[in-house]
Length: 384
Image 1 (cartoon, rainbow, N blue to C red):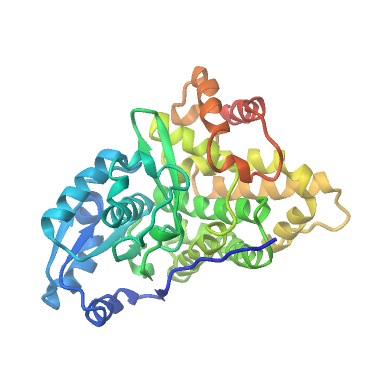
Image 2 (image 1 turned 60 degrees about the vertical axis):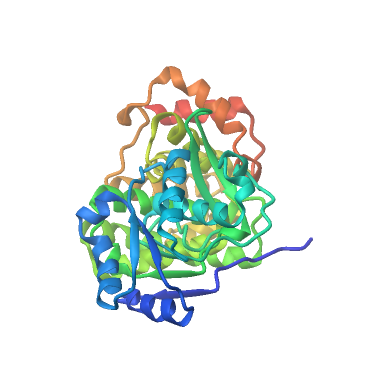
């Protein structure tokens, strides 16, 4: 069997890392940028930290900021119109996964115009050309969109979150500056952090996991699990930085190994109810962990040791339960709601959600074989 690793070419890390943006723009001889961001980040002054650098160095740019939390086909098309009109030769994405995913899709269509309907990019589209140059500066510590070969766009007509997997979409440069993450409200920091932990844990047990992705995921789990509560509740700078690294490292892993049904089920929630992706993952993760544990208990022992749990003399099932309980406890510590009912999901929608989730691209990577009935049972378990 041959395993493949795809990573972006250049990344910068640490407080103030965004200062490297200007050097890279000049060294690569770009002439004009389109800054892709969202209105909330502009109002919060986060995007301004990047645009101020462009202003100070007289680097020309336009802005596209009309992106919703679960970006859809309309967002992509509006962004493309702005991009074409601006005549920019580089995209600069300043935001969370929604912003970076939108920019990645725009990037791909600019160099692969035969996919301009957007929906034909669903799954593993056979694009021929590397996307338009994209520099990603994440403002959340969660999705790792800046380092993955994946992006997610909602098709509102089909009520489907399209998971697009394409090595051509990976950003040319990633700049992970924790200062851009500090302004996240507590609820967002919690949800995105739990999203990153989900990436690390699902990626570690997925069917596609192997030596190198295991290495990334174990380190990511340690960084996120031991630092998330401090990052969220105390706004501890060191903890924020470590979670920022952890989410990036998790991205290096799952982008090359795949995920499982936590993501399949979360995608359905996002498509039908616009549920924030990180929140959906956080609610579902403990339930799916308990259900999957039967097929890979040794990996759960590894995860438990990474968390620092005492596992001596425990049976396999006890280990599985202890790991899932630790995740559940962390979610409560950072303020994640406990049930789907709490966030307003109607019980009579669970069957429809299960229909969608079983056909999600992530389902095939789940370590335990799964049916629609299994997924429905897990939704019901998470409901109340």
